[in-house]
Length: 199
Ligand code: HEC
Ligand code: HEC
Ligand code: HEC
Ligand code: HEC
Ligand code: HEC
Image (tube, rainbow, N blue to C red; front, side, top):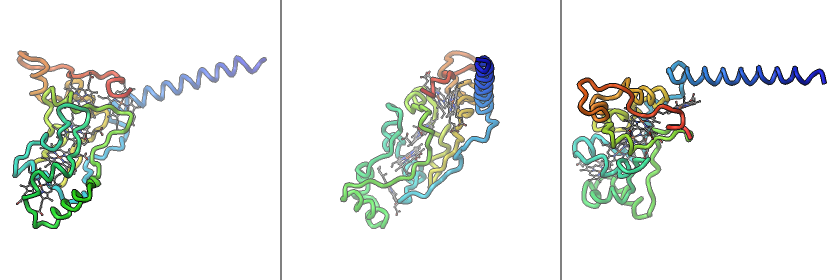
């Protein structure tokens, strides 16, 4: 009998400590103080040297021609080999890389592209919502038109997301779209409660 109230006190203290630690972690992560496992700068080699500089830069092919989901869904999506074949049935057919593309297409396979940007499963990120408010691909992905190989440009940490949602790092054209007619548009541009990105 004598042990019970004590156990309860201990349980309460432990519960409080856990809460306090969680709250501190959230504050520190939000403020970018804790080292986050960021993949900023990651630029893996791909199964074929596909160059964005050549396609989106020099040849000016629109991003959404290949990333057809970007304006209408959560994922931008990576094009299938059928999309490549729209051009490469005739373009550069002598190239050994394009011959590899033809072979993969004939076999009904796809390239095993190495994923560059990848948020943890517990984070929800919808492309569509950002594109609709005029956030440019370059704001988050850097100057893709100059990249021979894709590199992760932004840290993709929670603090990075929140800084823009709070209106701190938000590009001017996005602020102007959200606060039309204002001389010096400023303020939050998107929700910052936890369930916006975690559910
Ligand atoms: C001709 C098709 C094509 C065009 C046009 C194109 N892309 Fe891509 N994109 C791809 C392919 C294929 C991959 C996968 C291979 C790679 O990562 O390089 C990819 C990968 C990416 C990735 C990395 C995906 C990941 O794994 O995280 C980003 C970001 C990206 N593209 C952005 C853009 C932007 C921005 C534009 C326009 C400026 C653009 N792309 C134009 C075909 C295209
Ligand atoms: C809208 C047309 C178009 C589409 C779609 C397209 N390409 Fe290309 N691709 C080109 C052009 C144009 C070139 C540049 C040819 C040159 O430099 O002479 C090129 C060049 C290349 C090269 C370099 C070939 C070499 O050896 O010089 C590779 C590799 C390549 N493309 C792969 C792909 C892949 C993989 C896809 C699909 C994800 C794709 N392309 C989709 C038009 C396209
Ligand atoms: C507000 C920031 C932001 C903007 C703007 C943005 N992206 Fe992304 N993109 C991301 C993040 C974050 C990921 C990783 C998503 C994940 O892992 O769920 C990503 C992933 C991708 C991928 C690979 C995975 C997928 O979703 O299919 C491609 C391709 C891509 N983006 C292309 C584009 C293109 C093209 C544009 C412009 C039309 C664009 N992105 C605009 C942040 C952004
Ligand atoms: C450069 C600015 C910018 C960055 C960076 C950014 N966002 Fe956003 N986000 C926005 C804007 C603008 C909206 C649109 C709000 C609206 O539709 O009214 C938005 C909307 C959202 C929404 C939908 C909100 C809702 O109310 O349903 C989610 C979810 C989201 N962002 C998640 C993320 C995540 C996760 C990241 C980081 C990986 C991120 N965002 C990075 C600007 C940004
Ligand atoms: C605008 C989007 C966004 C909002 C709002 C948001 N988070 Fe996050 N959160 C993220 C992203 C993105 C990551 C992944 C960071 C990474 O992988 O580096 C993350 C990671 C985390 C983690 C894991 C910590 C770690 O070290 O990776 C915790 C815990 C967390 N969030 C809690 C919260 C809480 C609690 C709230 C509300 C106060 C919240 N988040 C609001 C985007 C968001």
